[in-house]
Length: 433
Image (cartoon, rainbow, N blue to C red; front, side):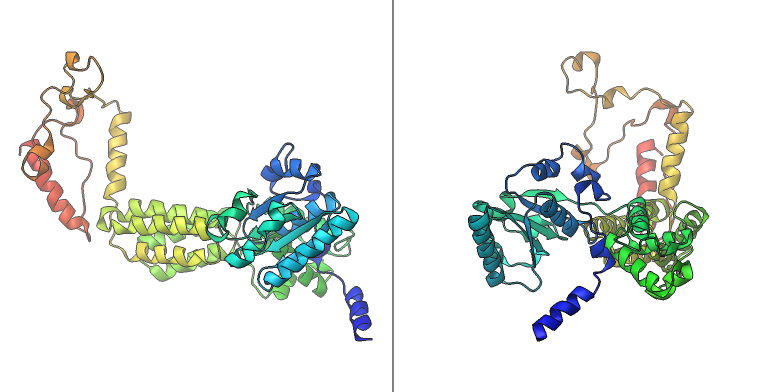
């Protein structure tokens, strides 16, 4: 009786909105056009009858499970899902044995989908090899981590690796609008205000599943879904921020000016506003990298290293963890001694070039490596600095038109003070002062 009751209760329980809205064909999939266009490897594999082995690598909510389900549905194959979080070798072998039995008895192939496959250890991944090698199943492994580091080479070398990208705002918006109107979703029983739609898109952060979960929670509270309803359902205040409008420019301006003014707390506040509003973390990272040279420069050369490292970290791991790396760089930039000597130097040099102060490259500095260069006098009388004390030798380096121009004028701030002293001595020596 218990099992019958549980089955009936399960049938009576509606599936989550994200499950109900799962695409049934490749054409219904939103996003990932680089994988789904005509002639792409995935589409060719789906249209063929042969078993396949795939790894789907991408951030959460980008459609890894959806693609596996669609492959199964389109090719009329059994769909068996295993989560590497809870399954072991015994479960893997049982699924493979059942697939072999089904193949032998009915000829029907099985899609064996292993979610979070990077969580399997080497022994568990080894258990998949016979099924992949012998094509007993169509194997699809989903991972949010780089498979070159988390998947054994024999399994990876026998599989096609497909990289999924985070959904764009337009993609997520399309997912939500379809869910509101589609009979499998809300079926038009609820209306979604434009501002509420924008808020859901921001909250999703490129994750379609998250956007549908939030929409479903809001629809349980009211048929007329407003920003206030979404805020109550998700328990997260809407950050008034338009990525294409005034708020975008105002907040990033305040962010840069707060770091320039050395107010780390204010800079972190604006960083948090951008992150919570769904701003592209790569955009934020780029602005920090620019700031490190434009406003800190040689006053703290390590600041640029921190900024670049944070940008690379964000690219590697994304959000939410990447916010820690961004905060690290913001604090370093805000508290570093400031100098705009670098940006002024390149600006002055470019200004002179645009005014036509070009001049000829001095004869002794010209390339002398190609045949015939010596006959032209290229490289004659060039003095190799490493042959002289302190690696310095007095000779003309700049064209005559800009010989007396000064571009880099270092400050006395932070680590730039000793640089200023050294540059002053070097310049005086080179100019013969």
